Image (tube, rainbow, N blue to C red):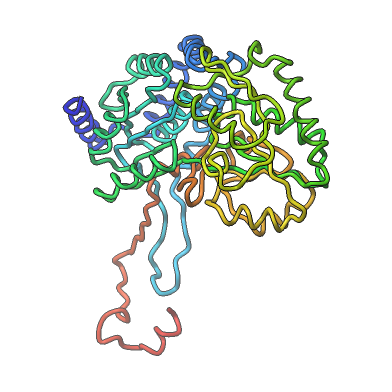
Length: 452
């Protein structure tokens, strides 16, 4: 495998150096090929998502396929505009020179995807790589073997490996990939693995984009519309069974509305998933036995207010609310990545701000209420929704990414194009005039001093 990876990377390097990926018509045609391939393999991808995660076709389409379709179409519409050189004004000191910025592809890129949204989180970055004019080596997650198999078949049937290649395997394969020299590594996963990626990239001073995670707080203030908040929060935690990097991780509820909100939350879960979520078509399963055992371990970290039922044979865990939580328990120290909601209460909003700021910066922050300006001014997060959850990922006109421990770099839409590009400054100076004042012995220095 190491030999295959090294040989393929070398061929991709040679292919990129040939200039084959640079022309905009080539990039657009590659985007169209990817869109066509996804349409051809749509049913197979959906079936694989059902087999690996019990993800319904509706949820697979809305949270995986449609997002990539939209990303491709957006790039096809706007690529020429994004790639166009930007003219900039020149200061008096360098006139009559002209200034511009050109966007050039970074080169040979590596994209490593996680298992929770295995189609979207592999192919969405690929759209940016193709759009920018890069080559790409793709690495899907081994924890969703059926999805990985279909993606591998699709990519190999669509592109030459000198341009877009894909390799399957476990973490040993990741290490082989990270041992190679890339021009950009795009990684989506946990902060702990992100540190390993960054360490490997440092050996070659390789640029990285890290889309990580963390504990994203969901704050329910007493001024919130509780009915709407409960409906949206219930959906956000039920989506993919909470196995979403931007899922609301824990609840902080104003003590005056705690009891009412929790009752509404349970009511909305029953509305979304029926009284028996195990029989619900649209409720995803936990990815593997190890992940389920970890989640079951959290059930002892508080009092089970609702849920807490599981079936190891099906890797099923019901939507669960835990109360009487202590801050130092594992459920409040680790990213949950499952359908468990630990609940904390507060009296004053500044308590929430202190609690959030005392911890690593989250990938997302959710606030329901009317005092959002105060929250935004005094906290930091990768993204934020006011009176909603999850939905900031849908708008391709805004960047998606983390900050600090939750990641670095951003993508989606134009930001995906820029993520795989280098903005190169170009200053063009004519030769018909050569101003003498910049040369030693710096005549007219007093005049120059006023100009610079």
